[in-house]
Image (tube, rainbow, N blue to C red; front, side):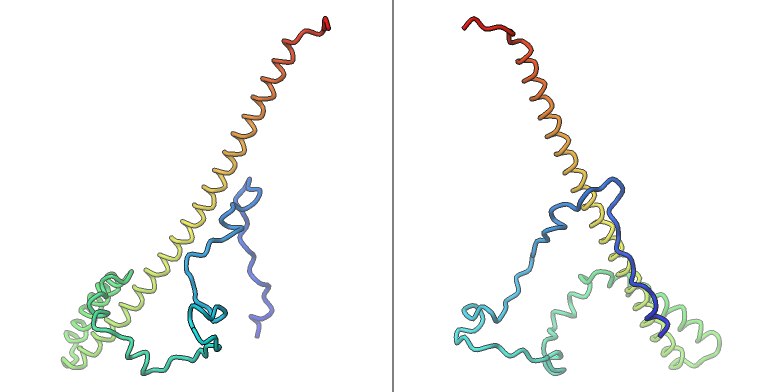
Length: 179
């Protein structure tokens, strides 16, 4: 229970010189549309509330299609995971066989190393992708902030030029009037 005594982690602060977050951070855009039972016309023409039930194991198995097995290569990090697993399985299986284990036992070790190596590499690759995605979001934030600052500076320069122009016109006016 010692973990409960720790204070919550601090939120990330904006970069130095930042005044406020850009518009896309203050007002996030929603890119996915989720159908809710609150709108009875779209989901349920009768207007009765829709019961949401938890999917069963059989429904999960039924949702697997044969095309899923042919598109494994499209999954991010799958290739790296399988290649690392194949290498680890080969090295461990051959090592066990050359050390003196019988072939079935060496094959079991090879399969275990394949599974373990694949999972570890896949998780490492996913962590790298999350890290890269967070860095890209940070870059987008900073770029948006810089563009906003640039727009503010351009607007201030435009107002200053207009004020100088107005002052020059006022300076050219004569201080006297005939009528």
